[in-house]
Amino acid sequence: MRRTSLLATLVVIVGAALAAGCVARPEVTPGAPPPTPAVRAGSTEQEGEDDTASGLASRFPLPASAADEEEVEYDDSQCIDCHTDQQAVQALAEEPEEEEELSEGEG
Amino acid sequence: MPPLEAWEKVFVEESFLASYHARFGCIACHGGTGGTDQMDVAHENLVRDPHPTNSETCQLCHKDISEAHVDSLHWDLEGYMTVLSARSDEEDWDQLMVAYDNHCTECHVSCGQCHISRPAVNDGGLLDGHKPKKQPPMNDTCTGCHGSRINDEYKGMNEMEEGGRYPADVHYNPGGMSCFACHTEEEMHGTEGDFNHRYDGEANPSCTQLGCHTVSAEDDVEQHDETHLAKLSCQACHSVAYKHCYNCHVQQTEDGRPFYRVDPSQMAFKIGHNPRQSPERPWEYVPLRHVPVARDSFAYYGEDLLSNFDSLPTWAYATPHTIQRITPQNSSCDSCHGNPDVFLTEDDVLEDEMEANRSVIVRDVPALP
Image (cartoon, each protein chain N blue to C red):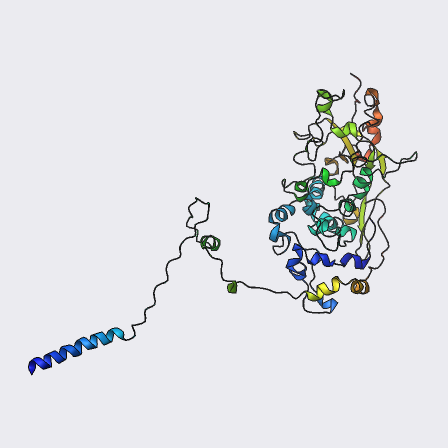
């Protein structure tokens, strides 16, 4: 009887251990790998310890995400529409007022 | 140059829109306000002529040229500063700069004023529907500014008193050479260095610089002996009469419009002592041109502003664009030797300018050896 209960306890412990291996593992966030310095083709120069923005940028292999760059879009469609329309510029362009020529002699 | 109507100056050809330069759009270079069909609103903060060092315009791609150009004589007008500072005192500088701002600064030449439009001093106007011209058209750009002297001399447009015209420079007719055949883009863009005067540095362009002429005491020309080549610039023997201007005065109207008055020009050929003798310009004799300055040129802006007027000759070093193989002074030995007519003598110099020109006046006209 005593041997039986010991055996049952052992089975429960082993079973629990096996079951524990199947449940979700604790969440682990792996550390980001350190950036690998870019090696430029054809260059034998060692990159120095340049920590300026341009220095870092030149060592990093990929361009910055386009989402990081400020994109400014100008709407110049009206400029183009008007300045390529001969009739429009003829109608709108004003001749400057004729001013009396005050200078005398060759410039 | 023929005038442009107002609309022609701003009409953009559609073919420009397909060009590389159009990819940046109008507003990136010219500012203004987008998204409106109201002309006045669209033109608010408009930049007609983008600055060469604007990193968003020319400099974006043409960095070296743009950076050099702002130190070039075409942009910084340092040549004016050099001669004005030599002829004045520091205490008069503020007043002189008012005159300079009113009368001289319109001559700045930006990138666009050669490659895209006519110069501002000629009231601008697109050259070719806004399409950039890699090599500017000389008749719409160079000679728009360098007109009364260079253009008229080079093309043979100056009239003789006895009738007819002085001949065109042989490089123009029959040579057919544009300005850029001699004046390189490096010179125009200022990439050869930062100079204070157009006759600083190497004597470029020169007749031999681009391998056009090989001149030596061993060539077939009898007068190309060591003495003549050492003592005379090429132009002293090979240019004919060119233009001289006198007595320019600048002033303003009551409402601030600047204007000038200058005496009628004269045509003459005068050799004098070299006022800019240096290792690069070693010749003893060179052609001299009377520049339009007078002692009281800036009298409107203050009394005696050119207080060191006598420190520089008014007969200045010149390289006339009137080149001929055979000229009056080289047609025979005694057409030059012993001939006071081709040399600048005291008789040619105004009494008030005698001191200023003492170093360039020829007192002993070279006789035949």
